[in-house]
Length: 295
Image 1 (cartoon, one colour):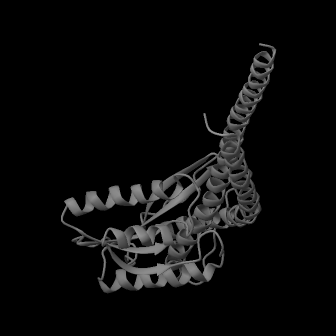
Image 2 (cartoon, one colour; image 1 turned 180 degrees about the vertical axis):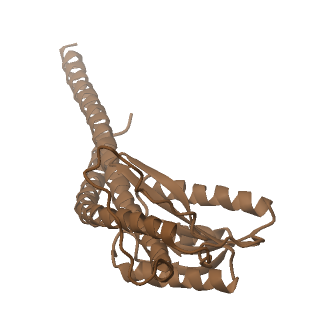
């Protein structure tokens, strides 16, 4: 049995760890509110943009936009991997990396080359450790920055490379925030832009059906809106991933605090047993000494 001093020292050490995990939980909760507000504010805009784009695609002419046209031969795949810059968020980053790794393995088995753009240090570190080709990296963005220009700059690079033939398809791996306890990795194709369908189907319960009037022509508007659609998909993925990161870290730190409580309770019980054993041993020595004096 460990000594009283050893047990007491261990209890003190775990209490300090618990203070850290509780503080990190509070910080994650505070950041989660900001990220969730930004995400929920952007969702209606992204949904309406997709609706308008779908309506325009039905009115546009037959001339195919290069961003909509699949390449005849796909030789190079570009994956945009969104992860966090920091750890201590459970299996959050590993789930995203596993999704990207599985897809990469599948494409490489088909003889295709795979390159990466990284948002977040964890994904970047994995790519470097696996000796993968990193085209671009963006650090200090996920979980902290909600500026649309970050997605715009990244999107322009991806579009330029796609149009010049540097890569033939672009996918983004991000985390879909469903609830505090559930975040699901998503693999989404962003280039060439998948077929766009309008959500304006007939609905007898709808109060009215909106008819979009296009100025200038639908073709010209499509040409301007399609690149922006790529920016929106990237920005939406970053917002969802940021919210998911803070939620995952909050849950991980909460579980860590509970584990600390369990360990403190177990060690306190052990401490009391050791203390009781020490007192009993002292009493036995006193009684033994008294009996010896009597004899």
